[in-house]
Length: 83
Length: 384
Image (cartoon, rainbow over all chains, first blue to last red):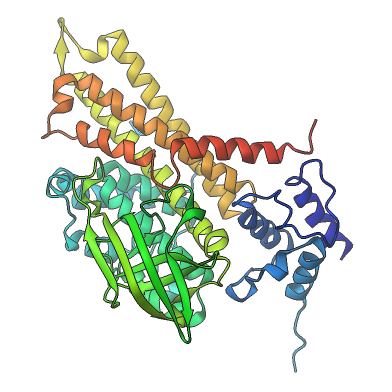
């Protein structure tokens, strides 16, 4: 979990110049991101954590903050237990 | 005359050979006629479909060719050497395929992808409007929810192949929340108005789309409301830029080949033009730019294949460099041929007009310049 958070924080630091982003701060309300940000974010998440962001994942609640992103990645990486 | 890229695999080299043969037999000989007629015959679209080129980005499970991004790039380069109007159709159709594959539900993929891959249906990308081009967030087309339907109202403009496309990927907004919809051509409330005689890619059959109370079912929504621009359009536009970048390499390659051929045959002042040093300089710049553009395209393709975040910047760079290089190459090709370069029966003037379009579509040169600066500034934000 710490590793996930560290990678997400490192990526976001590149987009938030001179601004320390709080873990629960709304990324999209900050005004620091441009129109390509979502795409870069999706690419990073898919590559770093070997998951696929799918149609049903397109919800701003999943991408809104560092904490939301960590939760989202954790849910996507959870392997269902065979019944 | 084509300087290859050593890192490409034998499979890619063979694929390129096949794409160039297809272009030489099915496209290049007719490009001038199509340009003059301002239209592409459906049989060339059928030929593209039969060859698997319209399903380039569609996985095999849906009937596509399942090309990797380098192979797709090479396809665009090859077609770009023959006819930028055909390449434009491949571009926008592939953007629609990509969007359905990337963001569509299983039902949407099963409905659309086999038809799109075979060429039975051709897709067009409908984002631009009379008042919104590069500034896509200004689009005025509305998509109002009405029970199990959305109602579209607004006008799209400069839509490639819209005169003949069977399905449109249309972007609108519901009170500022952007969404993407797959709209079939025969949907009531949609009117297609042809735009002819544009400067370049004249055979790409542009049209204006007018939506007046156009009702589409909820199942036409691609992706989620709120992500129409930031996910669906942005991702598709990246494929579009990548396609145009490679197509520009092809166009510039065609300029180079025509220039070398002409300069070798044409004699002035007792010697072939190629022996004149000022012509040599033009040829040298052209050849070097073509190779540099091709390498940037390969770089973009490799990074994009690896889902590397730097792929975003690399694709913008490839499109910026390749399209401007193509524009210079086409201008110089006309210059080398002089009056013959202006001859409507020759290809140089068409290449010149088509190259200008490559500098405008999928982000103008100026948008490339500002965006690349922004992207590299972000990348260096944490560095001293």
